[in-house]
Every structure is written in structure tokens, then in C-alpha cells.
Amino acid sequence: MEQQLARGPMDLPFLMLVVLLTGIGVLMVFSASYATAVGEGRDATYYFIKQAQFAAMGFVLMYIASKVNYQWYRWASVLVLGLAFVMLILVLIPGFHTVRTDGVKRWLKMPVIHAFQPSEMAKLGVILYFAARMSKRNTEKKRRYDTQKPSGVIFQALEDSGFMELVPYGMILLAIIVLMYFEPHMSGTILILIPAAAILFTGGVKLRWFALGGSLVVGLLAIIITTTDYMTARINLWQDPWAYPRDGGYQIIQSLYAIGSGGLFGVGFGKGRQKLGFLPEAENDFIFSIACEELGLIGAGLILILFVLLILRGYWIALHARDRFGSLLVVGITTLMAVQVFLNISVVTNFLPTTGVSLPFFSYGGTALMIQLIEMGIVLGVSRQIPAPKQG
Image (cartoon, rainbow, N blue to C red; front, side):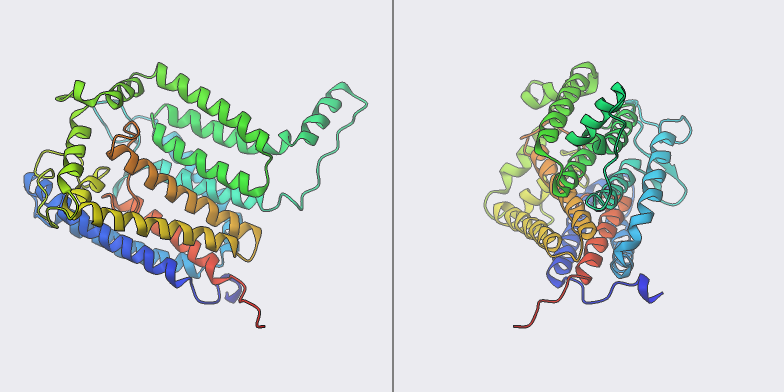
């Protein structure tokens, strides 16, 4: 059993940043949600208490994950990725997903937590599996094909160019893209593709494949955007939200009002006005707008600084990890968090079209928060095994 436990102290700066961001996030959920809770006939602290409970459970799971020897995730990666695929298929089957009037099928019905997004499991599964497989890249022997046959010449050329090693990764990502297309869930697809690309890049895949793969992905996304009604509508709203003030543009307009009214110092914690029935999803995807309104430019800037410090510390842990697997694991998790923060803040400021990406540690949502804290626990588990600096 001792071999399954991570030894050494966890990275204290990373831990403190996670605790601080989660604590601020839970408080912001309280401020942003009490009007919604009262409007629904609930106690004003309903969402706050639920989010605090999920945070407490998440911290327990984070601690457990930090104590586990991260080498265990090598073989567990196959199970997690397999479970993710099962859930991505189930969410498309009537009776398993929650019902929405717009036809979106992103949440599985669950007995205790009510709903769960399979994309959350897919993010973690892809990171674990890609890191585990890519970490063995330098130890695997390249295949040799019979060059006496025409097919062998072709396959050998593809092997030498590095294409063949990318086939398993490409097949996994393509399958996920197809499944999530039918949900549809564009933002979730992006949040899977970018960390996967980061792991492949860090693992040593040649740049030309990223140029080719990036071009294909951009082309595919362009086709999806132009052929999917809901994506086309979002692009139109992004270009001119004031042209749809009572329809789809209402939310982003109210978000910009909230950000602008905060000024330098904000109107004060709990004193924001946009959450009082004006800004939809104030406690969810648009919670940063409320933070800007109530805490002002200074408060919102400090939150961003905390995120930047956490991301930088994550990459520092990746650079100092004991082995290649630990490094790739942390790169994937840290990149995922960085992309989520960037996309969420870009959306609430109308820098990018609405994507439905939540803000890590802040947006209301129990399962997402717990998985994020588990991911932070994995990073802390890697930090426990960072080799001690040699004494002079």
C-alpha cells in the first residue's frame, strides 16, 4: 500500500492559490445567486450552501487525489476514457439526458447530483490517456513494414514522417468531436482539443502536424458554425448584440452594463444590481461580470492575478516533475484551466461569441467544481514527488 501513496510535501503555493480562488468563488456564488434563489421561492442561501458543500467534498477528494501515487493514473486512464465514451453515448439517448426546449443534450440524469456533463469526464479522460501514452513515446520501438510491397512502402513512409503515431490520438479526438457535435457542445469540444494538443506538443510531436491538424480543425469548426443554426445565431449576436436587445443579445448587453458600472472600486460586495433579475445566469457562466460590478477593476484584476499565478505555478510543477508522465499530466490540466479562464472572461466581455464555458472555482455547479478540485489534487500529487534540490 505504501507504494500507492505519494510521498513528500505538496506544493504549498499551488495549494493556497486553489483554496483562495475556491473561497472567493463560493462567496461570489452567494452574492450572485441570492436574488435568484429568493425569486425561485427558496432560501437566499440555497445556492451558496450547495456550492459550499460541493467545495467541501471537493477539497476532500483533492486531498485524496494528492495522496495517490500519480503513476496509478497510467492504467486508470483507460477506464476513465472508456467511461467518458459511454457517458457521451448515453447522453444522446432519449431518457438518459435532461430535457431542454432548445434540443441541447449535454446533461445526464443522475440520482443524487441531478445532472452531470459527460464532457467533464471526457476532458479528464483525454488528459490522462494522452499523457500516459505520450510519456512512453521515447521507449516504444517504431514499426517496420515490408518495403517489398507497395503498401509497405506507403506505411513505412507514414511511420517515418510521424503520422502513424498520431493515428490513435486522432481517432479518439475525432470520435469525441462527432459525439459532441450531436449534443451539440462546441465549447466542450474546444476544451478537449486544446489540452490534448498541448500534451502532444510538449511530448515532442513535430510542429508541421499541428499546422496541418490546426487547419483541419479550423476548417471543420467553420463548417459546423455555418451549417448549425444555433452557432450561426451566436456569431450574429456576437457581432452586434445591440441588434437583438430583447432576444439573444440581452444577456451579453447586461453583462457589459455590469462590468462598466463597477468602475475602479466596484459598488460593493453584495450590492450589485444586475443580478436582481437583469443578468441571466449571474451565478453561472456570467459570474465574473458580477465580480467586476461589485469588486471593480481592482478586485477583478486581483482575481485574474490569482488565476495567472496558479497557471504559472502549474507549469512550474510540470517543469520540475519527476518524470515525463507527471509533466505531461500537469501540462494538460493546467492548460485546460487556462483555456477555461480565457474563454469565460472573453465571453462575458464580448471578446468572443458566447460559448457556455464556466469560470473555474467560481461558476455555480457542483460536479464541475469537484472535478476541478480532483484535477488540482492530481497536480498536487505530482508536486509531492518533485525531486529535492541537490545540496551544494
